[in-house]
Each structure stands twice: as C-alpha cells, then as structure tokens.
Image 1: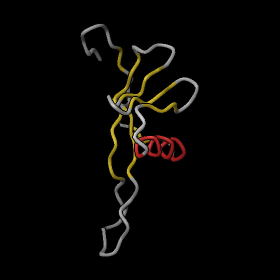
Image 2: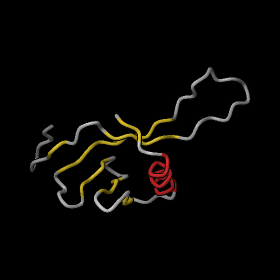
Image 3: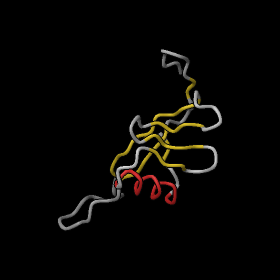
Length: 88
C-alpha cells in the first residue's frame, strides 16, 4: 500500500469522520468509504483497495504521547473488475 499525500489524507479523513459514503480526491478519482475503494470516475472498473490505519511514530511511544493521526493508503497497483469477479 502507498500513503496518500497529507492534504489528500486530511480530505479523506474529514469525510470518513463526518460519515460520508464517498469523497472526490481529484478530478479523476473518488474514494468509496463504504467499500474501501479508490475508483476511477471515467472507468469505474478501475479500482484500488484503500485502508485506514494509524500512523506509526518513528520513535518509541512514551507515556503521555499523543497518538498519531490515522492515514489512508491505496494498493500499489490498480485492479480491473469484471462482472461478478474480482480479477487483479
């Protein structure tokens, strides 16, 4: 998985926390927050899985540390879907 840039991640995180079902991340892609997919809006068969996970700290956690913000990531390679199957 590859991390989204900080601005895109913040956009996705705000949409996720506000309970939205999807969010446009640019003119070509949207994130389906229900199915956890990045979808090409010109060709909806082109999709990538996304996941949300806490960012890890680069140093050992210490008492009183504030936990890092979660990050969204997408699969490194897009996948093509055909009707009824999940082909990669």
